[in-house]
Structures are given as structure tokens and as C-alpha cells.
Length: 247
Image (tube, rainbow, N blue to C red; front, side, top):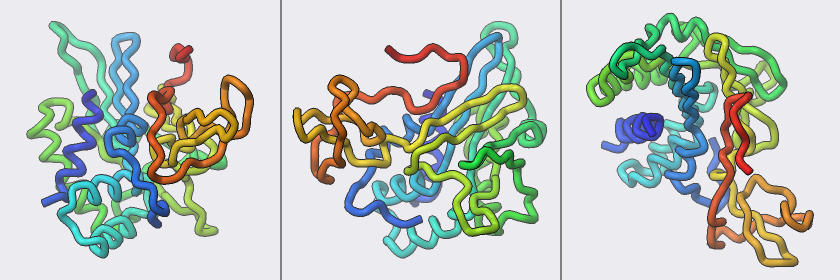
């Protein structure tokens, strides 16, 4: 997936929030949870959510930065919600005419955990460190992903409200909604990749961490130990409304 390539490029830029106990998310599963692609009616929209959990997981797995440096980087990003988006319409011979990133940014909003609509922050409300990160990402995306990368908008939203609560929390029940113009993309929360598997104590079956009950028996599930084997498969956590559901 193109969104997966975007994620690995973003993480690689730094390879040269609080930790989640002893559980370490699988980077591939996490990127799968964070990417969404909608291709319908001659329109292609790619959304990649880049929460602090993504950066921490990527940097820890790269093994190039000391824990204190990773903590400092994550702390810089913690007050924000960062989303990378590309949006375009189909042209001739399989080409895609992508929207200008600045136009795309102005057309985007997100919904926080309480359903409030948030617009992108002006650069003046974003820290210098995060602005520098966005500036570094843009030319590298363009060089490595061609027209898509050159038109990729990395958009920053408020991540903490006036009461100090995070506007979006990927490890808590709820949803995270991204609006790109008239298109709505929705993540189901919590993200399974950020939680240890859930175990049915009665049957021993293992399920994704965002399951609360055994879908076959109705039995209540419990968190598995950090070293427990992962479930064989997970349903897609992020869907565009109206898309067909998995059986």
C-alpha cells in the first residue's frame, strides 16, 4: 500500500506519550491500522494518521536513538494530531490529478473524541520542532513518491483541549473521524495493534486486543500476557462510511 510506504519513509527520517507497559506493538500491524485508502467515483484519497504511538514504535524498532531522545521527540508531538493526506481525481492513461496540499489542508477537519470539529492549526500555533519535521518530510516524500509525494499534505491539528485532555486517544474506546472535503474516513478505536491480544479464559482462544467479548460464545475476554502469541487475523480497523463490511 502507498500509505504504508509513506509511513516507513516518515519513520526513516528520524532513524539516522507514555510507554504502554511491557507491550510493544508490531510496527507492520500498527501501520496497517493507521492507513486508509478510498478509491471510488474516479477519486483517490489516502489518509495516514501519525500518532505519537507510531513514532515511538518506529524509533524504538529502528534502534538508532536513545530512550531519552525518543521520549523528547514524542513529547514534542504529544500536543498535536498529525495526519498525512493525498487527494486526487483520475486522469487519462491511469494518471491521478492530485489536489494542491495547501488547498487540501484548508478542506480538512477532524472530529475529536467528543465529536467536536477541529480545523488545521495555523503554522503560528505549531511548535518550531513540529514545523521543522513537516518541512523535512515534504521534499523527501516528493523525491521518493513522485507526484503523490509532492502533493502530500501533512496536516497538524490540536491534540490537547483546554482541560488538558487529548482530543484523540488511540487506545481508548471511541472513534476518530477525518473529513477530506465531502469524504469522511473513520477509525474505530482502540487500535488493535496498540493493545496486547485478548484471551478467552474459558476456551483459550486469542482475539485482537480491541475485542471485549468472544464473538462466537459471548464470553468476556481478558488481556493476554505481553508474550502471548498474537491472533491469526484482525478485522480492518479503519473504514470509510458506506464501504462494504468484512464478514
